[in-house]
Amino acid sequence: MGAEERRPMRAMLDGPPAISGGRPAFPEGLPLARPSIPDPERVVRDVRAILESEVLTNGPYVAEFERRAAEYLQVRHCVAVSSCTSGLMLVLRAAGLSGDVILPSFTFAATAHAVAWNGLRPAFVDIDPRTLTLSAATATWGTGMRTSAILATHTYGTPCDVEGLAEAAERSGIRLFYDAAHAFGSRHQGRPVGGFGDAEVFSLTPTKPVVAGEGGIIATNDEELAEACRLGREYAKEPDYDSRFVGLNARMSEFHAAVGLSSFDGLDDRVAERNRVAGWYREALGSSTGIRFPEVRTGDLSTYKDFTILVDSQAFGIDAASLAEALTAEGIEVRRYYSPPVHRMRPYRNSGISLPVTEHAAAEVVTLPLWVGMTEDHVARVVEAMSRIQGSLAAPMPAS
Image 1: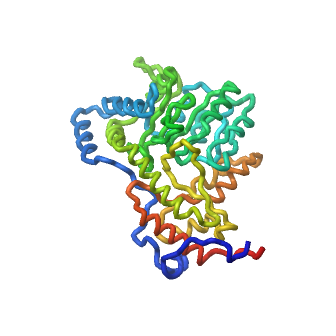
Image 2: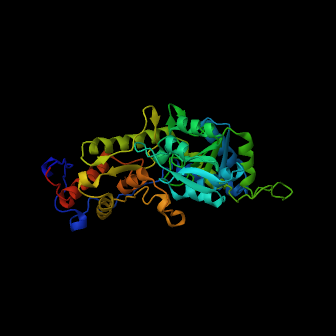
Image 3: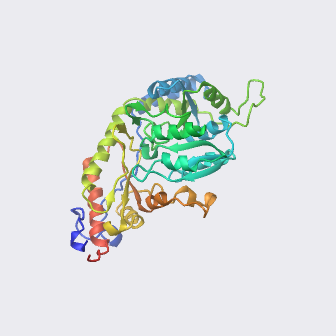
């Protein structure tokens, strides 16, 4: 392909990109994410009521939050915890696992940290090149005599291949858990993410669809597992103060539950709005050579907790790292979820692991701003900045 055949995005900003001394596209700054708190005044009233009650933990707000979460997720049990990470740690501990846990390396480090903190060995396997979620085929291939569980991630809020992973776990007689940090509000074939596998664990931090400030939710239909997690979040101690196993202080406060309860209002509308913003990006970038998107399977709904693109450096003319640096100079906050992948991080480096799909994806990712309240103009200006960067910095393609 000759240089004239590359299809650059249309640039409407004048002059060079900001990284080369030009005027930034967003001198005021464009954040990567913004928390959605539908009714701040209600939260203030609830916090005042909590303070007046003098019940700051283990009270009615946490109980109501668990009830509302279970109702929305269509599961029998929800256990509120202090974070998604502590929830993952508790689930793995309560399940009584040993040996190896299969998981993706293309995920946030907390997925692997929860495994390692339990004295289990993270056994990283590759991802599906289309969805960037854990591949059922590689999970099956990676399962061995020491494997006790699969821990998959609904990456960016995109539902995993839940049927394929369930089949892989059942065939091997092992447990199946999901890091669903991004996925409160996602759906697989119309069914809410939350009731798949033995348990799913959600995050409630400010970048997530449901916000509690900090916190997490363990969702499960396994009564025994739920009770063990409830016990485990209180140091696993019974009223006699005799701990039944090595638990944690992983309680959710009443204050966080009050914020989380307000976040249920309009949740589906906010997920729809996130999909609308993602649609604007896809439409604006869809014809650009060298840019592609992780797939969401037909019939599934992603929360688009993150909107991540993959940049082919040869076709686009700039690699993902350089594009991210140039966008930052434009006042556009970006991330590279997930680069480096976990198996390349210092605690997990292992030269014997070969994950070609993961490493290829990690080299190409750039995560762009997406939040409720973003406008089509915001998206257009981001795309225009990318076009200006490409037009100025892209290396010419050699003639074919």
